[in-house]
Length: 131
Image (cartoon, rainbow, N blue to C red; front, side, top):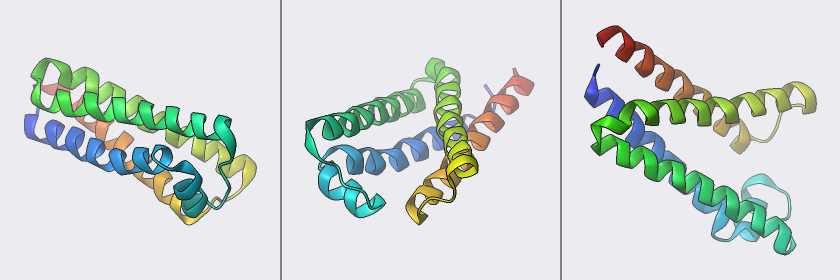
């Protein structure tokens, strides 16, 4: 199936990159989100939402790591990686168009998400050609 090492490396790098973001959202959101993004996280409902996001991000990262060592999961994981990153990136692009330019951290996330989405679809296309 295509360039196995490239696929595995992409999944590992995406997972490792996502874990600190997940933890910054969910471990102590009232401190980290306020510091990184400049708005307060107050009360149980705000904290609940950010911890749920952390769980979603960690679940995806765990799947990508599992797929990196489990060949039959690699193609589905590349699709999940593409959809996850492209979905986040598309939402951020929409926000830039409708709401304006966000802070530097959020722009960095946007570029990283689009970068990983492009790499994932590239791996999927490359794999189609070699199958």
